Amino acid sequence: MRKLISTLAAISCAATLAAQQPTTMKPEDTELWSPVPPVVTPGVLPGLPPSDAIVLFDGKNLDEWVSVKDGSPAGWKVADGVFTVEKSTGDIMTKRKFTNYQLHIEYRIPVNVAGSGQARGNSGVFLARLPDSTVFELQVLDSYQNSTYVNGMAGSFYKQSIPLVNAARKPGEWNTYDVVWTAPTFRADGSLATPAYATVLWNGVLVDDHFELKGVTKYIGLPHYTPYTSAPIALQAHGDPSEPISFRRIWVRELYLAH
View 1 (cartoon, rainbow, N blue to C red):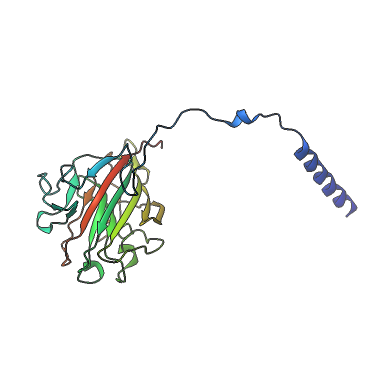
View 2: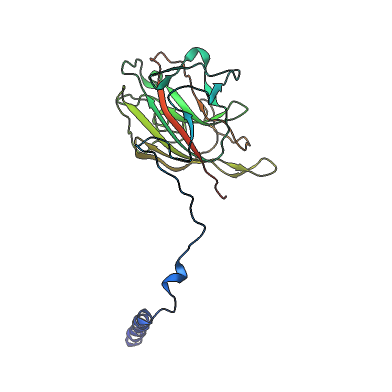
């Protein structure tokens, strides 16, 4: 016992002396002065695009969008600074393709929304729409006092994630998604190198925290990965009986990430 006490005392003394020793490092030794981050001017008001954003909807037209069906100009109705889903013309997608990015998008469930469950204000933000028509879908739905399966409510990656909380606003009020999307990468043989990840803030509340996707989101069946390098962002015309969902303030910042 005496030997153990003596050993512990020696260790304690050595630690105390080490803590008292003056460091040989200078403050400058841990300072980094380059590379200097580029200057980005934030939006004047919350939700407005920063200076380096690509504006996908400016409240005036859908020039950045085309019909998924045939590549013709997007036929959804634009009025009063917003646009609404037009079921008869189908989904729309961006003319540009993206890989890794930060996305801001705002949507509104109509105040007179009808239906229940998945047939109540259903749409979707497809963070990548692939050539084989598969998608990575962030669900849009009326999730304010509307019961449905939790991996299909708003804030979920359809049939994959359950949002950490339900941050839905009432029908008639604007909801906001802020998304950081990290695309999957693939080896030369087409096998998966790194999966897709997404972080989502819904109305300013974290609901998906660096969520790892298992592949494309599917209505029936299990997710899988299809190799791609870049893809358009798309919006869904779901076709449920609800009144049309509206969108506004859509912008994206491309991110160049090292894997």
